[in-house]
Image (cartoon, rainbow, N blue to C red; front, side):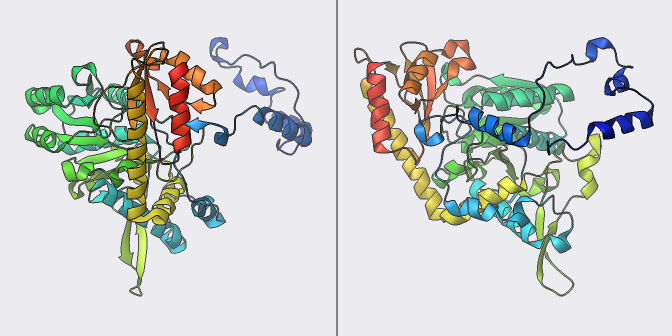
Length: 455
């Protein structure tokens, strides 16, 4: 069994050397209550048998091309040019660690520098970092940047229409720091960001308020003009953090151009395939004034001793990532591989390509939304209503029966129909979040409508 490194004889020799008879004796000092019970696991398999068993288990999965995917909520099914995977599969890229030694890492450093430049341009900001874990930790890091910059540790206001996973991660972090987080529900209990209530609370918070975090587009796909709101937040002496899907910036004005100080979120949509939950790609971009508050890696351009263009990690000491409470950030793992995938994706599409992909998402989502609205109220249809609000490529649909039942019916027809919002709020058990990307065809959209007409 080649995947087990030590033989029984080797293990016995090591145990004898440390003076114990069994591996379990090494943990005898621990109370019984905190020890894991013995696993009733079957004996190990040989490599050939193990491969056959894994193939059998894998065959139970549905291939992605068997389902028409209308599910989004932070992980999106976009078309990725084959060149992206071909380039990222080069050994010098997928085996590379954090490029601390610039003299041997110029290629990787240049790719990351270019990625940062693209993300900063997309977000409408001055600077972007090399990469974070995911959208949830990116929001946490963005808020921590604001806390460090303002020096205010009293209050953070957050839009209740930000992704629930992101808000849960933020709450965990701020609770540990002793900072109060107040999450404000969407305006009117609907799906649009709570800008009105957030503005009132920001104005009344005084010197306690460090920042306000909003979604753009938010979890429900809703889009709002942040420019007036940004002025209000800045008037309260706080910073504005926008949790955003950068794919949308191909067609929407980016938050950095609307007054956001920090733009962060999940960049999986930029060329990282759906991967059962990860690894994904968090990003943070900001104004130049906040560059020294930025987490993760930051690559800069310089010249070497011979005057040639060169790249290196900059504005941070290497040790800052392990300095505990004195460090700029708790981010220690570099997501450079996913960042380079995004780099290749954006390079392949270019500015016009990303704009065109966004236009297709927008138009196809609008087509499905109008077709479903036509079903609302129709006898026998599963659709009750399709609320009106400005959205990008995701929107909410109200169902007659619980959304989980409707989605189960769609799955039987090989349609991954959306997300049951009742998973996050029991009051929304009859609502589902539907996403349409450029990959969805007219035939798939029509099949979706026809299926809901009779469910």
